[in-house]
Image 1 (cartoon, rainbow, N blue to C red):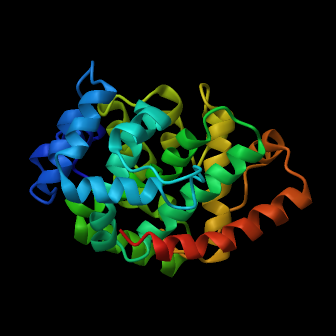
Image 2: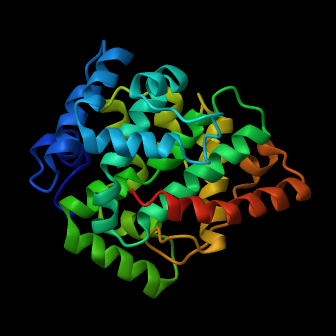
Amino acid sequence: MNSMDVKDLRRKVENIGALPTIPGVLKHISSIIEKPDISLNEISDFISSDPALTTKILKMINSAVYGFPGRISSVSHATVLLGLNVIKGLLIGVSVFELMQQAMQGLWEHSFDCAITSKLIAQRKKLKEPEEVYAAGLLHDIGKVILILEFPEEYEKSIHDANQQCISIFESEKNRFVENHANVGSWLAEKWRFPNNLIETIKYHHAPHRSKYAPMETAIVHLSDILVRARGFGFAGDSFVPAIEPAAFELLDLTENDIKEILREMDDSLEIIEELSL
């Protein structure tokens, strides 16, 4: 691994369609959402043409996470309600569900619970687009999936190192790879033409103070990731619970009561995860 430089790794990651380990549906989705002028109708038609994908998307949207009054029975209705960036995020999220389960046991549960927690905090902070923060929480560890698929043996060693040395997987990755999962994930988010706030949230969820375009959203996903780890939901590659970055905590300005309420709502979300085993 050490013989590969950042450019080589980025080229490999961005050429996701050529990875033999990537299933056809993700290759197809990747090519669809990378189109510069993709419309809601095109994405809606694409999802509707795949019954399995339609079922997964509607199941997620109709879960208690979103809280829409009444059930959403059509993909076109869902895309209009949620918008392009959220639908793109959900599409990638449900398409990597099985990959996450195969790649690392517990990674899907960690990612999904981080998405729910991110949305809870975003709503508490009265952000205009809590669903976009949800999508960022769902995809914050997408870089891990790609690293595991492309370098399974090396990544297994990273997990082993993290647990042996009591360090985070983020630190362990830096010791074995030329980049970490956060940067790898942001390369994909750029390739998929996600907006800057989503790219930055994925890129800086371990260093929220570095976010220029989306400091609040990045701080939210940063805190959510730590809270989910602290509660022991899922598995993100290590058993390490990092400290919350002081600047992010200050920016979020949550009271002790806010935190207690968020933790209570997180516990309720466990039932949703069981209901949403896609």
